[in-house]
Image (cartoon, rainbow, N blue to C red):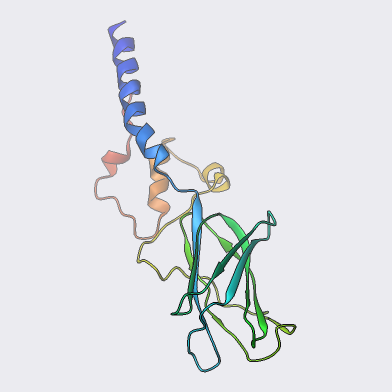
Length: 177
């Protein structure tokens, strides 16, 4: 009976410690970039529309005097970016995928022309996170099910992250009741 009571208290403590961490998690991503003309000068007041390919929702913003724009807290998924400005051809960046907590940089260089003309970029560079030096790994459900865990310890999945090491293998072992 005493062991059962101790286990109940231990579970309550673990839940109390884990609950605040769960509410602090972000489930969104960000898109930032700079819009410039053919000479590299920033374009102020350009209309930037970020559209979710999956949901069809759109976020509109304008560039500032430095030609920069930002769209924060968009749900993870696939997005396109369209930029329009009077005196320039419209530019459309192809669909790219945002993952959890990613800040994607999408810079666009506009071409002089009519607004009715649209330049669609076919071969795009991969979206890189240049805003911070953090490295992250997303372990999805498929990875979780596919990998064999010898000791059935989910903490071993943390070793899949790039640069992750474990100096004490005994710390990965779950205590036995």
